[in-house]
Length: 98
Image 1: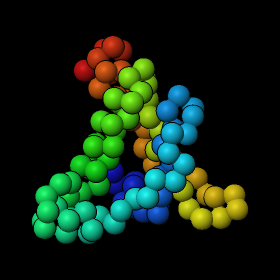
Image 2: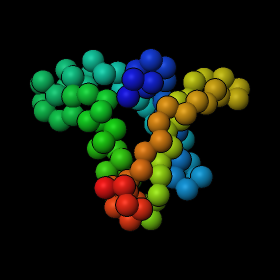
Image 3: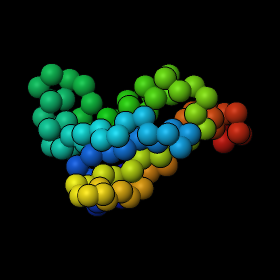
Image 4: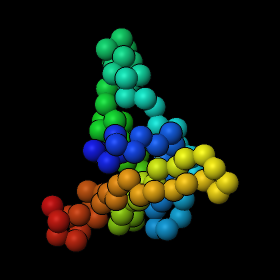
């Protein structure tokens, strides 16, 4: 999470099995998440927001062994940089990481 905060990309590309499943997922400002959580509930940090998104991906792609998150910055071509590599809970259990 520290790398995500340090790089602060405007968007994320989500890769599952080498295939992009989100090309340019908007990364909401953390302050907006905190304010929304205070006013209406819901997730209040990037950690919670990402965990929620990863849980959805785990449901949509139960066979996924890992999910790669790339920061995306404007440009032609856009600048891409890996910000995280996540292993779904099921994959961790199957591979003995749990």
